[in-house]
Image (tube, rainbow, N blue to C red; front, side, top):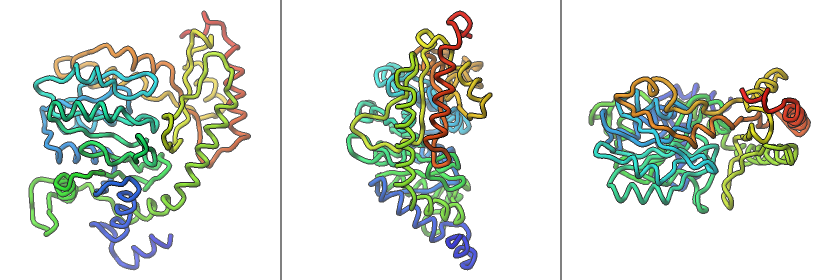
Length: 365
């Protein structure tokens, strides 16, 4: 509230105010990147980053299907064609070998996704981008505070895009950011988010209105002050879930990337119906019946969502077996500072009781 009141007293509410600039500097320092360009949300961040990287309507960009559909929609909305690749089941991120098989004459970019904070095979995707001379972007909505080979997520590829939506552990109510080490891309992105105006307020080209306002930046700066404690709470909760579900047949808590720093923002379990004797959807319904707000993440996969499923002339219908297997198994569980060991113990008990309660023939729905 002190920050918000300061913005009100200054009568400077938007248009690259001091709080926005401070927030950008903090995110750049946190990620080790030279530039942070805040946006009103991550969707417009992806769109601006793609345009700033030279990707245009009609171009194809390879993107994993195992992601929230907003990743693909951001491209589709501005006429870029998402080409869906399969993923590695252990990491949930783009299968580099499949990405390479999908590269064709119209491919103008790759958009990797760091899923649940687990980083992509950045080295493999970067090698492809260099070999084929195409930009590499990353949807890093889940990955603030995470690392890849000891380096903070944010400084890889042509640019990375963060989300600061209210559901993220660092939020600005609504918001996003493009983080990059490319000076020219950053300059283009800053102009594009501000109606095409350059640093001298001259029209440098077409643009949109995608800037962050001071009130959102105030929330972001305040959230950053609590970042370490929030990560510690998330890490603690993740450990309690691992303990509470240890030994439950067919159920496992998806791990964080080994030897990396993680934000533990998500607690995601996998339920193997053949082993557990109960399908993920049944467990989800039971949890929801107990007012536990679990969520089936990315089901059924972007390639099976509209408009991609129906428009086969634009989006070739590829079978993506690993994506489809994952979307059939994963379930996100509540975490964050609003719950603690007692709530987690109760959630784990519901899951433990659900697993042996159904025979395989009844459960596989």
